[in-house]
Length: 463
Image 1 (cartoon, rainbow, N blue to C red):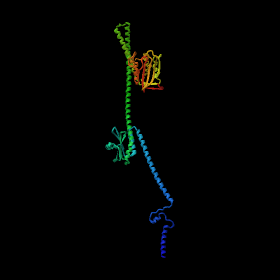
Image 2: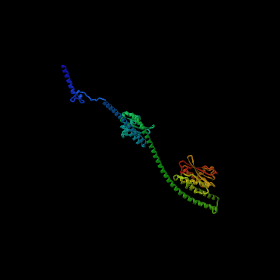
Image 3: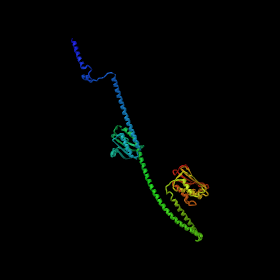
Image 4: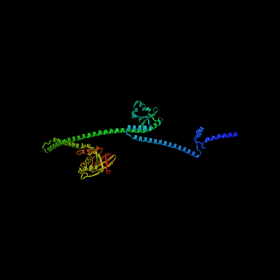
């Protein structure tokens, strides 16, 4: 009985315990109540495959989220680098087009600021080995000699400035140093070596831009100097033309007065000669000879004074383009050529020459009429030649002796005034055109007029 009582007692105690655990409802205790009774943390875990599936799905989603975040971060970094590269290339492209060294330097400093975010930037230009003005960010920072002396010195170039968290490098073009760039207070100083490498690539383009800007400046100064010289020359030419105009006016007046006096002198000499021949004056042989010589000298003076009338107009007016065919036809109409055939083979030819070039064609034809004998044909023919074009003038007259081919262009040579061919060569020489006689005596004259390239043009048809 005692044992039963004990078991009963024991059982009753056990029953009470279970009853107390189960609670009044007879079910499981609420989550956390058991832990509260036992004084330990507890968690209610469902059993079966569904919780495991959910757990694995959650882990997969967490892994996928982390992977997407990494891809996104990498994409942002790549896009940022691409944007930086695009910006750098754009700025470098604009820098190479700049024409002012000051603007190139400012753009370079802006680019370096964007790339490396230094606290201070300085650039010292070097031209011909001599250091020039220093440009600073912030402005004026490196104006103090004690700050600039060491940083821009030769021994500190192309080096990392560990004590200043910066770097220094030369800006070069080919083998020439055009400046020194200094960066201090880098935001990420441990990347200074990488920055130095990147900066060299950037500064190569900037060095080219600075060299181009200096070349442009020199060319601009040369152009300004040339324009100044041209302006001075134009003023001098204007003054010279004005002086020539006044001299020509004075020459014309003086020549007119001289010719008037010569006309009177010739008149008296001719009357004296007629009186000697008629016997109204004693016909002393010596006196007769003197009068004849005086007449000859007076007529020579008259021809020489008349020559100045033509020669003073050569080169006075500016050269211009002339239609060769038109000038030849106009000159032919002024000469007695009714029985002479004129062949013109220079259609479409324009010549850059003195306005008196029409006198050239007139003199050639007049010379044939006067000295060629019984001519029946003259011709002008244009043809290509090395370095230019040749107008060949020929007739079927007597021709010119070999000994006289060059002498005919001298002033005073010939049976008439001796001025025609002399003036012809002088007029052509103003624009670099030459003339020579290459014919054969007995077969007619052959004058070759050589026109250099640039002094002629063919319009409408080839000659």
